[in-house]
Image 1 (cartoon, rainbow, N blue to C red):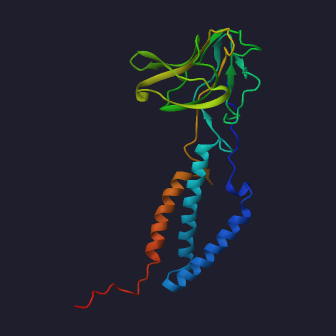
Image 2 (cartoon, one colour; image 1 turned 180 degrees about the horizontal axis):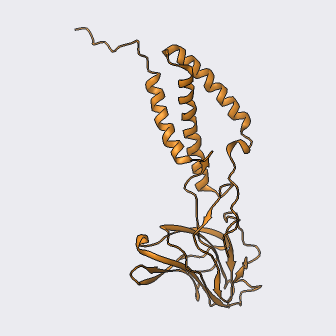
Length: 254
């Protein structure tokens, strides 16, 4: 099943920050005007440097928010059509009270709780394009007896290996896991494999299609990390430009 349409990224102006932004801009203009007069540098250049410095911290803050919560920030699926082959699993088939506060809504999720704990089965996903690392949502009891959630990896030399995704049980909560493919540069393809071989109480598990969490967001098309780096440079430039030039460092009298 293909990845669902990602949520639209909201710009700061769409999140109710117009008032504080306008006030901050006014303070910056007034402050830089005074600094410019004192140090005899153009007002527009001082204001531009100050505004770019502000963008630095804004980009850094938003980038941290993107890594801490899905919020309005989109995730993207690992490349490749995503379908399941096998039996015993269905879309959103998890225990009814399973919480999903940390699960992106645009990512497909599957489970083996087909109205009870007695369902058994094994499924594999389609082969997916290699990535250095990916995220996957996990729920239920994949680490319990007769249960398995693994990553099958095929390398470019023809070798293949399987890796268990989790060593503990998230219970009735969707938990986000970060998995790095070993020797990712040599991986040709990978897939997810899930097995429910238990008919006991709590004999179910859930998993999602693999996805990539954003390392940063874009503001007006510019990555937040680039804004942060540019802002640091501008902050240093502002400090140099505003340093008093009419007071030379005199050597102390002998």
